[in-house]
Length: 408
Image (cartoon, rainbow, N blue to C red; front, side, top):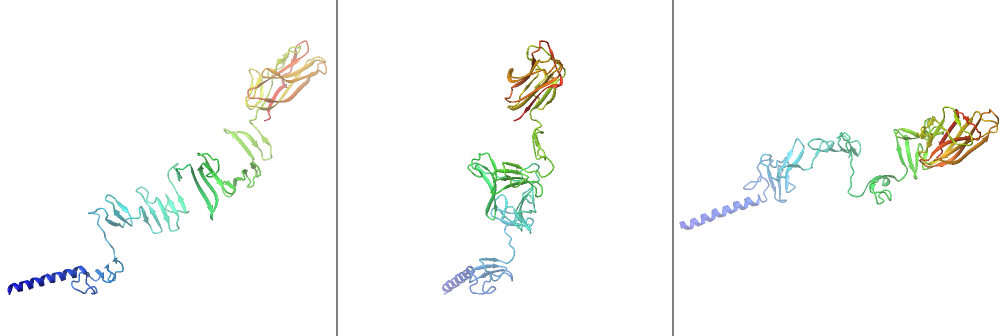
């Protein structure tokens, strides 16, 4: 009998234990929070609850709507005993961070919400990229005033860099979906057909304008024509000057070589112009013997082409030149013949002016001009002669001169 009672007691203990374990692992059944036995889901009025119908767990709410519904803050992990996968919130940075095993990584990268804008930071600059509430992006500035505002404090630094591994790259500007122009580099007809691989191009689908301060347009490119001072150029280069100043000035290393004045006068201050004359009278032997006129006073020589040692002029550039030779004898007899000649590179070139003296003791000035095509390096010399048997006087001063002007 005692043995049978022991079996019964053991069976009751085992059954009760199984029942308790079943209830513990299946929840409070259909009981509301706070009811049932054991009431292990509810620990306080704002504690942990189990939603039987939805299988949801509520912390701080007795009506959880999600698998885990938390009404209140969560603390996950700590910074004292951290392992990979731990999550924390930093109130000083106002951001969540996750631990990757060696570093804390912000959930939003380096972006931080500052109220009226978000920004990205690094260790040296607090606001390197900013996006404000208006959608403006600031790089290097916390107060962007345009859709893209770039600011740099680096002296002589690059503010913006656009790079491409391709041989073509460009930026296209649109107005309501219409292409208005582009800038870029490269070949293959990217902007202009036939452009070289190292080219940089600016293209406007309409007119291209360049200007100074205010609304003053400096230059316009239209249909392949360039206009300066006009928005409707009618020639490859069209300059319209509206103020009392030079319309055109071309300089070479700071020296003006071409100038068009406001009145339309064209000046070539460095054009080849030379004039020389004799400082004293020259005795010329008779018998039609050519004598070199040793012009030794330089009145003007814009290109330094006169050689005072050899008494010759040498062309520095090829072109067409106007040459004028003037001379006068003071003591030839009546009927004597006088002549003026030019030599190029040591040979007579055809300027041979001869005239008969009008009367004994009469001073007759002789002058001759002609146009010649000369090559760079050609040199010009002036000669005179007369047919009297005796030496005669070829007058110096401004009575005798050689002038050479480059026409083109």
